[in-house]
Amino acid sequence: MANEFLDKVEDNTIVRIWSKKMQLEKGDSLAKRYVSELWDYTSINSLQELKEIWDSVDLVPTVEEYTALLHCPRLQVDKTYSRAAYVPAFWKKLMNITRMSEQWITARIKQKGECKCIPWKNLRDLILVHPDGKKKVDVFALSIYGLVIFPKALGHVDKAVSDLFDQLDKGVTPISAILAETFRSLNACRRASEGRFIGCEQLLLAWFHSHF
Image 1: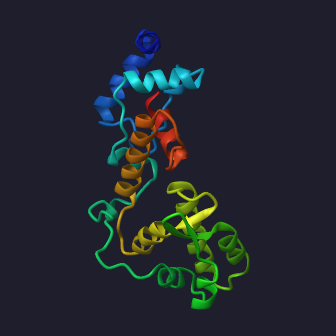
Image 2: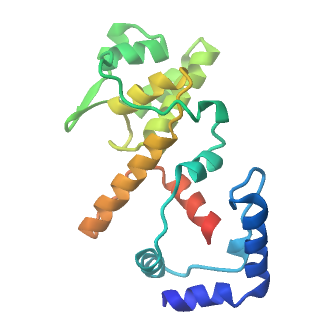
């Protein structure tokens, strides 16, 4: 089946010439302002077909591709995120990010398995009433990281996400951490032949579409 799928693409002279031309000119199909047109020529009809393609074709996202898809500023490329040896307590990081009191924070921290989290509903309510406009944006961004990019406990923002988010204003790039989580989760699901992907599905889908 996979060979039939690839043959459909390779038999299309226009696609083949265009792809080779773009690779020679740009060096990467994800060059700035470039939008892939390959999905105009190909289609995937079922989840089983997608799994068979994945099993037969060696495709892995790269740091450069994720950097392009997320429009990560180039000035951050040389500052890769890694967890510091000493990290402030979860409630202290949340105080710094939200500018709320210790009492407000500690009353809302929950234990989910081995992880400490804060419920999204508490962050949502805070966004609606916070008097500081910048902090509203910070809390909203933290929520996106916790719910979309690094979803672990459903409906909650995990402690590990606050570790990363706390470092972003220091000029580090989150790309390596996002890519590592993608690999880890995909490998776990593949080994078990089941399970839920823990990562940014939207980003993985955008990456996949850029290749097909």
